[in-house]
Image 1: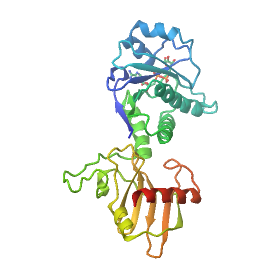
Image 2: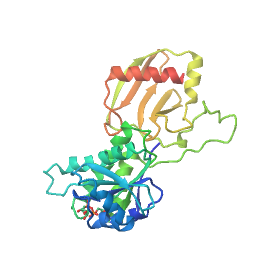
Image 3: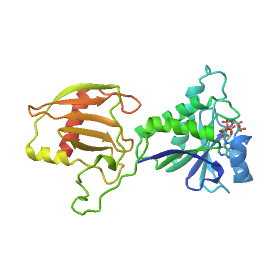
Image 4: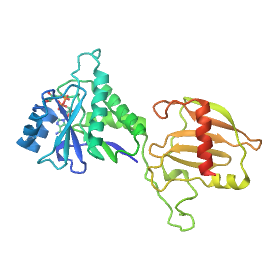
Length: 300
Ligand code: AR6
């Protein structure tokens, strides 16, 4: 599961990450703001390596060593200069995050810290930048859930921290650490009786769809379903639990509720499916039916 957060601090002091991201300019030869701070802390060898890269286009990213910095790599990306919003600024800012993560991924980086790209000298409006940044990371993590352990924003002031924290809360919810019981009987690794407060669980969003799903279960299968399951490693994509005759299926690293299945004795079950695109990919009912059947095959 990826830990996504915003903290207050100086990005040049972050030793808990493999890489920090620099909000550079197209020359990659240093500047003011966070760029200046990173070059000062890394020492002159960083500039020497940057000279070999021959610059970087806006929205793209390149990687160097970190020299005297406490991390291993610096990813240099160039944010857009704010020109009023009609010069592809949003798209370019989104590209900075995606390309930085892709460049980092190729080096096997699992923990990465971003500054608030473009919101200083380049004057991108803070809240708009935070919304684009967090959404870009959210979509990336959704598509590649196993790739990173930590993605954080290191914010230099309270206002920036507030902007990113708000967006993270909106898209990822408050995360809650799972607490597993010590009781040996319950703590069967593969099949434990799940309590909903062991992991974050979010409600079904307003945007959802309801359909009928046909399938019969033996009493034994239903018993197994009722036990629910939280994977020991939260890298698994799903967990589920039942309350009465209703099964709730969530995505484990986000807590988003994806399916609610109300089982009926006559075999015609009611499925509610999440249709909020920021939480779940777009599917059609036939695909949902196929996926639910696969999930229920595994779970029952
Ligand atoms: N740690 C974390 N964040 C910082 C730090 C630090 N040590 N120092 C500043 N910030 P900016 P931009 C914050 O201007 O808008 C440079 O000259 C800062 O408060 O550094 O993308 C480059 O060479 C703000 O919230 O980057 C380019 O020419 C955020 O980092 C140009 O600035 C980004 O501010 C890039 O402008």
